[in-house]
Image 1: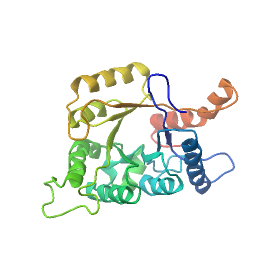
Image 2: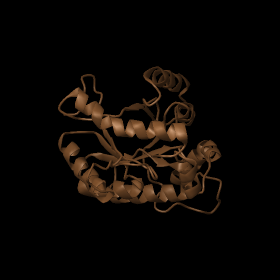
Image 3: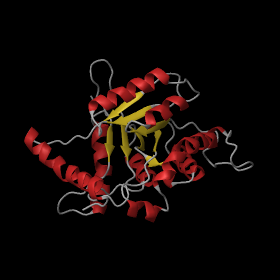
Length: 257
């Protein structure tokens, strides 16, 4: 089973990486196959991602892919890690998750984040800029309001079939978003991309400032890390090298190689 002593559970976030000699459609089909396999192993959740124009990553439409994963499995929880809320209208996101929850009741997780693309070119293609990430807090409130029927931004508009459904929300963060999750009283999903010390500090801040809400009575933390599986540690590190180089290139020069 996928549980540590003490009750910590394993889950998978798969970004549908492409392999040498294979194309993006194959990577998406591999994601669905992987979901079946990890369900059989007893994993708790299987999430998919939203990345645009990232080399080696095919996962760009998470709610669509989540539907395929949920249809191919029967027990494992299925969700997004995550839908990048600044790229979308909250109403549309609520409707999409309402459809997922209607078709696969009790199995859907709604993970949302605040990224607006890695490079200027991607942001322009999405019709967004860096400042759009600053609207994440307001968008999050609106998104949750579509489910409860309490949103006030658009009177006399209703999210069908989301209104009245309960889809567990999660806030994805690399550090800064932890305070938003705490203020909203939502579970936190945090990655280790910026170092373990910063991760631990962000988790402590989240736990100490958490405000109980109708969505979550107490803090809940999911730690996300990059994992490669191979016959040896050296071989696993080699598998991680291309993406590490690609990200370093993008952050240094502003474009992907």
